[in-house]
Image (cartoon, rainbow, N blue to C red; front, side, top):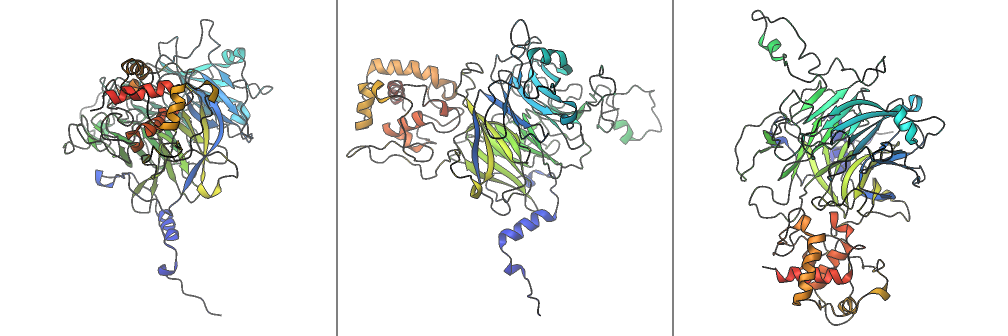
Length: 609
């Protein structure tokens, strides 16, 4: 018997790439040249899809599982409720936790601004035995300060806490004072070491005016780590002795001589012992690789770049990620494409740009976003330690992976979803939640159309009959023919025929009916309709696209830079507004009448440059 000699030439390239990725452990970049940006290729070329698990969630902000064998999934709603999704995908009618009914004066949760509310939930590693879980939310009685509270389920009623049980078992671990109403919240998650990690933003406004990112005397702008397993339950928590600043502020006798510079450098008299890492802007979501223990932090950027930080499981903590001295690899403040400044701290593993990557830059047509939301690390479907993130504005999903030599950031899909957070199910599948919400025109946590819960699967493993997220088709260009023959209105995302099911045909006005036949806007040039369209525009659109229609979060509306090319004509503009592009525009189809859409179009046409 002879053995066939195996050469590299006989091994498929995809298998070689996967083998290389497994042959070395990823490391944090040592300099800015090692930072990944869009355009990379993940080992093995994995393809993914998003399959809907359940829907009906109002402004969902986080998703987690209890790891107790029940298969349950828990979805946080901004208003202050945690919804329970059963293993079969059905949603329990009663909330698992309801913080809106435990305070005799009203809700315990502050939701006055879109970035406030219930942020996240985490289950104790021994939840099955002790019933402990923890939530992080903006407290209304404490003027929006972040509170981290432990609750305990009743074994006789494991799927719901009554208001009485909620109040009886509440134990406040921490109250994080917040100077402003944004950059407040973040995920809480138990790490592989059993400690509770807390992502805390820089406190808000913009540009970190209080310099919290670099100050060690505040919890703001940090990743915190605490030990919740205390012998005396009257004690809130303990400081892990291996925290990098656990003893840095301890009182001691002053000694001037015979002490090394290295030892002097460890003395930080005002440092907080809970700090694990610092220099973060708004780390709303982070994830641990369930296989390796590595941590990935999705840090929401300032005006021009989003970033992902990597921290290996071997880290001893103490990393400085640079904010506000830098934003990713870019100077802060950024003034142009060639800014020069010292790099501060550990560079991110990856970063991606906003539509305008620097002040005055021409808008990018592809590969951009505006607010990074971490989903989770996938170790299935051809992915080996791929950290998935979704963008709140563009609906893009990026995958960050290590190819054995360097980081690769690949755009894996562009969906029609407005991502807010992610997590895992008990099997380690990555989950995502999306809202249909607005930022500058926030109308409260219960006023927006509900969002949904999704599971990331390999594209080849989508169950038969499952609903998947719409994927932006690169061929979804402008409608070229709007006269002669019957007009077929198509969705601006994937070119699928629009189904006008939201408004009964019998209720349509004659103007809308005629438009669907002719493709000509009957309100164009009509002064009264234009004024009414302006009012509707102010109500629905100006929060994101500004009064002059030049855009800020999404695509511009009235200039020649069309992120949706079909918006260049009347039929296409109607398709974009009715069917939605990506992000917040998904909320329009069943909220705005056909006549109002046509009047908005007439108003936009009247101000076109």
